[in-house]
Image (cartoon, rainbow, N blue to C red; front, side, top):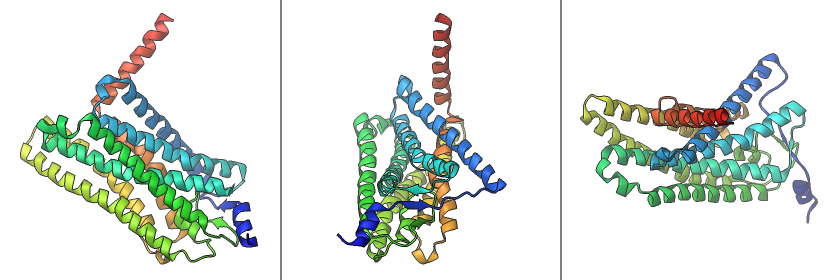
Length: 316
């Protein structure tokens, strides 16, 4: 084994991070910790409520529980390590740690892409074909949609992590990011990564553009159906649900496309770091807030669980 290969497997990487010790960055770091706390608690509550309340055992809420679980895992993949490095002053990450981060966040990003498309299809069937909803979105189909989302995302994660870690890395080994992002890692490679970058672009077409096409087609039909419904509570509720979903989709897919579908010559570390904040930190916080704040079923389930807790305390 060559000396260069030994260096690759024995040396840690350095995560440059996103914050310094200035007062402004200390405030921004505190803000990120606040967002992390809200995202962690919000997604945990959503998963628990949907599991505990029988009235939320529907295809829409099952898919929503999977989204919350993915967001919970995604934000825990990047923020705790970033916070530990910033607070301790130690910016290193091992090769195994870097590979684990790549696998987890690529898998979760890919899985969430397909899951958001499944959620759009669910809304399309519910609004455009309500009489056939129980057939087109039965428990088996819903489970298969979620399973395929996890499987396809994991396959993408395995491939990207394995190939990225197969390259030789040299020089300062400083990753200009706050986590092991593949495009940022490739800038440190001593070998030619052009073929791999093209492969990532093809994966992005499958993982990003195909789900976006499904989402756009679903919501075009939904919007047409809502317009034909006329005025009333039903159309307003349907439009509210769809508009909140589209808000999340726009932020999530827009940021991901900006990072992974641009030529490497157009990239700057500062842009990549701040745009990555949208889909790794901000979106996981917004999802439970957008889907639950105006949702009467979730609010009812939350009050029901609180009521059980208070009853238990009174009995004790």
